[in-house]
Image: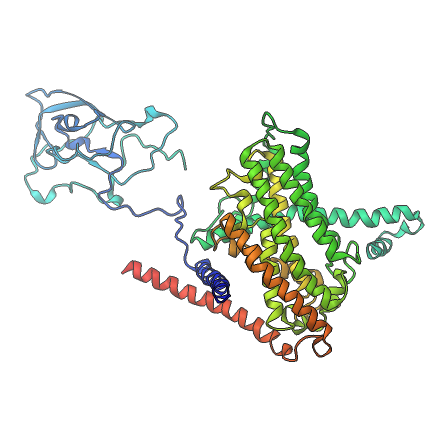
Length: 183
Length: 397
């Protein structure tokens, strides 16, 4: 009988304790992020969409070789020896004309392995993640630009060197802008 | 019905010359249409409240996109359910399959016939009101078993049988407790029961016979919650064990009907609880009963029953589901003995002349307890906000 009474009392009391907890949670600040209106501030080294700064690419193709899923396609040929010498931002002379630099983001596995071998730090991952499309072919980004303006003087001055990974606010717009279709 | 007929005669000038059968039909049909419309549209509001409360209690925000603050979300859901195909799986007993949700709804709607929304605002003042409510409310069990059986699905049948076992078990303590107000008032009519609680909050049955009637109310509320298959007692539709219980095979409009019935039953249990224990349409203080000659009885009854519904939702998002044996334990070994003892004791107290109208200390409890309760809830809000701020600061640090 005593056990029964304690059981009944405990059953009643623990319900009240639980109700107290849920009542408290009724008024606390909600954890929900109203996504399209509010966004997470992603850390600057987030591994999202790849970006390639065409003006700095020397066409060495090391990123394509490092890629475990072969999602980077590069076609380059030798520049004419008489042409004006052009340089990457860190002073590397650009000796190849890069005609094709495509990255298929639908294949990309976001491993970040392509960015390490790059001698000019021109390929990097951005915190940009909203590039859903209704068509997979739109995930093939063309980075090779016609009429790009290259640096024609050797920028040995280190002070002018571009930072390797841009902060999210300073991320340059990608070659083919993708609008978030799923939002 | 006399009230509605009188009102109709007053409102529609040329109706006085109509034959009696027209008047009687109108007096029955008009409140019926009003009530059914109210009860059919009510679940939209209740489901919205439920989703919001569920979200808030889990630190989410609930529906947000459809309409301002997601207010049209349940409307959209209802419209979606209406336009969905009603699938009849192979092997269902079609007649029973269609009939089951109808019967569940009838069982949920019929108690509103005797609900007193005001001293005259009542469809029919049956002299067996309480008995009628219990009788028709258990009609929905038949519908649930029918749904389970007609689905030709073992999970649905499990759900139906479980609901039968559960409702049969919880009906007993509920009816035992139901008899206590009837004994005190000496009438089965809900109108008389409410009238007997006139005179402010301290004469509500909840605060009479002080420690005894609150216990009775708790037992009645618990049993009522079990009867409408709400979460701590929702084994008939336990999603984690039975797919969806008795409405596994239902889709489209029939599924919506089960939902409607569930929320309407919630409202019925809340209304009956507030009529029996919380003074029905009576205000906590007689001064609050009328504002400028306009009776607020309807508002008070709805406010009380919505508050009880809020407590039901609060409990739903607090407690986990009981196991089948725990459920039976609660019904047969906890609620039933206590309600039996209460019934016997209360019978004795009502018979014994000095305590025929309550204990001498009763009038000291009504207001202090109610005010204390709301103060507790308010301090709960304040402390929750403080706690939330502290959490945010801790996380930021």
